[in-house]
Image 1 (cartoon, helix red, strand yellow):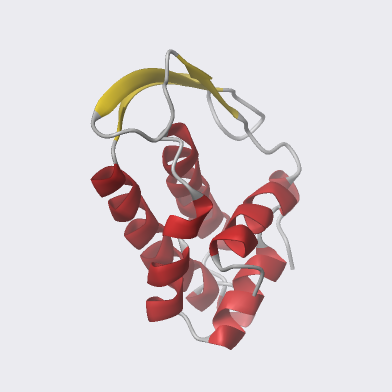
Image 2 (image 1 turned 180 degrees about the horizontal axis):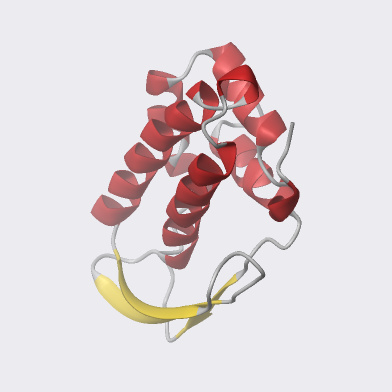
Length: 134
């Protein structure tokens, strides 16, 4: 069961960023919604940071799956965590393909399918792209 708050999905707007280059930084403004406050942060853009974000996303995806359905405690907390992970990943302009390896290492095929099914459509598409459409 998907929480209702997923609908007002926040969008990261990049300002002054030059793609996923090696070691640059930029300012990102995250738009707010009923559940998330707007925020402006400075983030670094590097392959190492993208790989780190992908590993964190995979770890938090396991927590989300472990605490959804009958085991919810409350699921919104874990959606908030993975939502923040995703915004960091997007703010750094990381390539979706960086998500694939850590997700394949940490989650079974069944867990990956459940994750994609439970995520908001924008996030789910990035995960699908990272997994190569699987």
